[in-house]
Image (cartoon, rainbow, N blue to C red; front, top):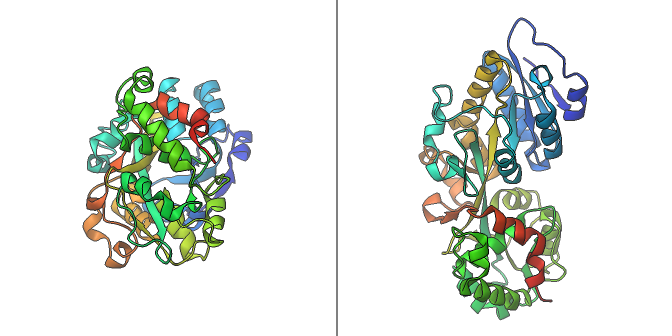
Length: 367
């Protein structure tokens, strides 16, 4: 079978395109960055070769999903499997979009290899088995080992030694399109005592919140200003020598480093208090025909299978959602990516707090 790649808008114009004699499904990818073009092409080619149905690959934006899922009736369903970002995962649960249950399911046995804390909840909300994590956008500390001697091993040490890198700490604005800054700030507040498992009103009233906010404000005086708007601008700052140390996702950074967009002198490590590993998810609409729903579940199972998950980690440095592949990772990958046994991988437990940081976090930053 051949791979067909279209846009979501083009697909919407042909929403009534019927299945032929065989089952066919459509996969909408809203988490497809430029650094994954080759990856997805190869994954889709293999899926179409191995699975007993055809899969059409479509890229689009979150807003398209919201509009379509709100408006769709049974004969208007366009997408059978949707790959979504964490922000939309939360919205899908809160707004009650009709989603099929994928876990536990005999059609998705590979989901049994995913830790309960990843598959059972999204930012504190019960998933009801309707979301299956694909990868974890894992944050790590990157530092220029020619300028940073003995990189800090905790947020506390990083703050204590901030003057060593003052003016050269990279940070992405919390209200930027990229989630990098708000995710790091959320982890920073956790590191300085904030209990995100409490209601957000209680969090804000706590002494720990006040301490974390004051500590962050002081720390931010050593940021490189202005903060970046996203990964590409952060990498430019690293290339220019403006940023020596930063906390950002490992996959995009290492992929960019291999292409000369991040200096070769940058290495990575983890911070003792932990750093977010934001899951991205698969969902399947519930009101699609049963034969397509079954095919969609089988496709999700393929995507969290060994071949795809290992390819994702060894080529893209994106940490898998499943736990059964680590002994198959080659040594050359471990030379660049820290082992999961060394990771304290945290999650966003407080959706209200995370949203508040997105809108208001920069009020704590001081140039």
